[in-house]
Length: 434
Image (cartoon, rainbow, N blue to C red):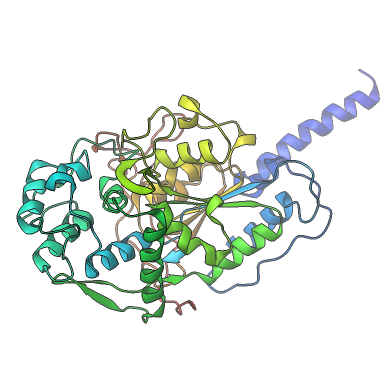
């Protein structure tokens, strides 16, 4: 070997050793391929609410991946969950509460509540039939508090008002029947009408003061929603830097579309639970993804289902392949979420993964363990959770299997993640402007 080759080999060895000394976190973003930028990328302008160096690391990611004016190559993809990630509180809840308060839920077909969900149990169907007698095209939930209470309990608690399980027999990694039920209860309305209902609920919830409640049936429920200024700023910055920004929500897609416009994300870039339509109206059946056919009603934008819908609708992957992790070039660079419902698509992100801390077991186990250095943990930007007193039960019950049983949270290699302590949390924060 000549002197030049020996020097080159030695330099390579030193480079590898140096990378090891830097540690995973310092090198995580640097291991990703990136395109040269034609101009300086835009910068984040909102600093309040970001924990530690999270803002700085996100800015470095924007600078590294952003096209920032030039049009060569595929645009980097960023994907955000919606509820409690881009906003505080839940637009599905807000819409359901509005439907109940305004008597806009249709009477089930043939008066049979089983037609509203394949997973609805017999006790739940009987309880709903008793509380909600079929007296017309729509249920008078604005007057009949017993009916409103029963629907609210089945939707919000997954149980009847007498405590009997309302749903059974579903895949817990692909389906949350309570979330799906809201979309299914829009049966009979056109997509445009559902969007009008969502817009009315949005207007009320943005106008209400932070902390406000509203009465639905005989219950007091949350009555306000706010956009996070920090996420508005981040989405704006990503779009200006040439990122292809998408929303993926476990709320009905027409509802999510109404809300996402205000952060500059259009309907084409908003994914949610999709109903099968017939004659211009929503049905109680749902669109499928991957190997799931339309009307099977077995997969929504929930945990592993979010991966499938991202692969199918953003990257054009079809069939069984859509249900699997794709090569790095066909995965988002950045992802943000707040719940176990987001954990699969967050794990797929190749650059950074932002976890807003709502004390959700699997998500926080993976984020705090941070095995590859790409996780960022941040308190919620409005009314953040305080410190969780006990460690997250990662090594025992932090993972929910497809059959609903609990298990340890495991790394890709099968090893178990040890219990993690809660270290990134808040006390209070000023409310965001609507």
